[in-house]
Amino acid sequence: MAAQFGRRLRRGATTTAVAAAAVAALSASQAPAAPQPDGAGDQTAAGATPSGDSAATGNSPYHTDLPPLNTPNKPGSSVNLPVTGSAESGIPASILAAYKQAEQGLAGTDAACRLPWQLLAAIGKVESGQARGGKVDANGTTFSPILGPALNGQGFALIKDTDGGAYDGDSTHDRAVGPMQFIPSTWATWGQDGNGDGRKDPNNIYDAALAAGRYLCAGTRDLSLAPDLDRAVLSYNHSTEYLRTVRSWFAFYNRGTHEVPDGTGVLPVGTGGTTPSPTPTPAPEHSGGGAKPSPGPKPPAHGGGTTPSPDPTPPPPTKPPTEPPTTPPTPPQTLGSLENAGTAPLKATAGEAFAQRVKVRARNTLGAPLAKAPVTFTVVGDTDARFPGGKTTVALSTGADGTVTAPVLTAGEKAGVFKVTAVAGTAKPRTLNYAATVTARQADAVVRTGDKALTAAPGAEFADRVEIRTTYKGKGLADTAVTATMITDAEKPAENDKGPYFKDAEGEPVRTLDLATGADGLLELPGIFADDTEGTYKLRLTTASGVTLTVELKVEAAPAA
Image (cartoon, rainbow, N blue to C red):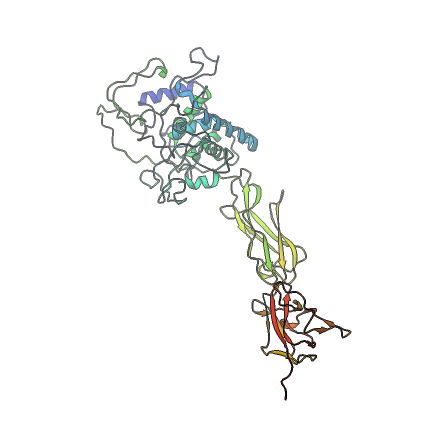
């Protein structure tokens, strides 16, 4: 879960004695109740029962020291502690701002949770040393990704890749990512845009801090209550040792902190990659009472209380003991919103299926995708469009990503506009409306049914009638409007005032007629007559959809006997 600061860091204090003194000092400072020791049946303080790899961090390792024994104090509350606090109490400016902004954001959306920013600071300290001492840019994004080890089951949880390496650069196994060390699958559900740049980036402290806050507040937790706070921390990493360490830093920061410039925060001891010396080392000035750690190497990773060996060679890494599973937090199952999940405009031609389908996404009150939310899709308006089976209403439920897609909708023969509604929730239903348009079929081709040449003598009627057929996708299309016009041969054809013509009801010559096809798209034009001028002329037939057909007409005298 935590970053790799150049090498594996210690868990616990420099020695077992220092760790024990730290816990004692925190207990004396009236810090929130810590969990029972591991020896007490390995039960968590909250009494929760574990559950596998569903923790935010995938239970990957964390790396930090316990806080200094001389914890900072709020001004004026003690004459024995410094007003400004030790170097350890300094939190980089951007990191501190992100924690406080997340607290304010949760106070507005989930006030009952009572998230304290100091809890985020404690987790951020344990997970990444406050983003490696505040090494972030002006937007709060780390200069380089903070990645945990591959969760390959070798001493850690086994979590195969869920993001294609998009966040952690590993396409085989997942790794915890960013200053708050989210595994990609958890980030996919809980990721937030805390800095308003339109992205949800686990490497950004504002995004990660807000996501961590929402995760800790999952369900009905009230973090002002010790049991709920313990459950929240254990949901982040299923380890009683982890809970004790976070609790220690939480108490430390509650005693007082101060802001330091970005990049100047204090990293956990041992980040330089050097091997600890077996010789005695004086205690830091803030270790309280001048107590010094006993000589010898660091204790084992878990500070198990064994007497340190004088052998300066660290013991080989061992697989951490299995922690009892805890119950993971369950996102609130209350519908918060219903949103369009990318539905394009709904358009179809009469009798055909709509190319687009209505797709919506349900979210809970924290903004996370809400699964198993019932959604009802309904066809509304004067239309004969229908879902499969001739249905106008279909009820479905959202999937794991909070989305659900309506069945394919098929247009009827009636052209026009109607709407499709998507409704979720009962007490306070959320409704989305989608406009749908059905367009009448329009001819995509017009052809003659015969190919015989059309000729007439001057002043005579053409012996053969012109018959055409309009089609749509190869099928005859009835009731297609067709305009027949005798045209000139000009570049921009216009009605010709010479040559062949039709007759109107009074028998007068006309050279433009508005007609319509009958059954199966067939249309036989009225008789065409030639005037006394010989020549080759053109008849243009145009459908309402703009499809045209040009027919040639010849007027020539009959050959001499």
